[in-house]
Image (cartoon, rainbow, N blue to C red; front, top):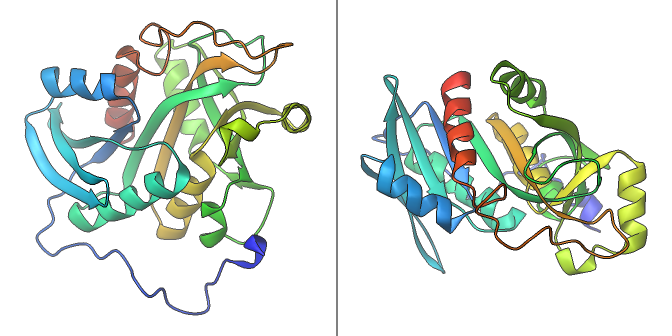
Length: 251
């Protein structure tokens, strides 16, 4: 059973090991958006600092220098296994302990405006990755939620806090499961938070996640809330500015 997978009594066969000459950065900012990646590369970065490799090819890691600090930045892929794995790979290439993860998420509450920032406090473990990093439980807590919320409050950014539902299969977000998760206090659904947070807790890393409220599940039928996500959605480059300021705030 997947719930019996966590093993802290024997060593892993493969472990990420930080290279002796690995450059150090104050934090790493991770996006899912190719639109945001292009904008950042064109307007913020001072060069590449590392490369992450997997069967799908190379993921360039860029360097951003701001206020005397050094931040890494890269675009990851959708889904807990690859997002978690690339962060682990990055810890071999760079000395980095703090990670800002942001992207779009489905909204489970119609009262939350499209484009509003959602700060997860706990993640429901409806995926497989987290069970390799933590004992079985319904939720994994997000310890830095209060810090992220405090940052939003200080900077006057409209936000809402609540639980998130991490799933492996967006085409199997059934009506019954939606009702269960909403009744349990979940305000969003996405595909990475539980896995990444469990790994960060296991590795002693700090995760600072936030989501952008996108499509709405809390409706008689799925509401896409418009397909132009460049305005108020996951491709809105303004959310990178939030992520960059958050990285500066926590480092």
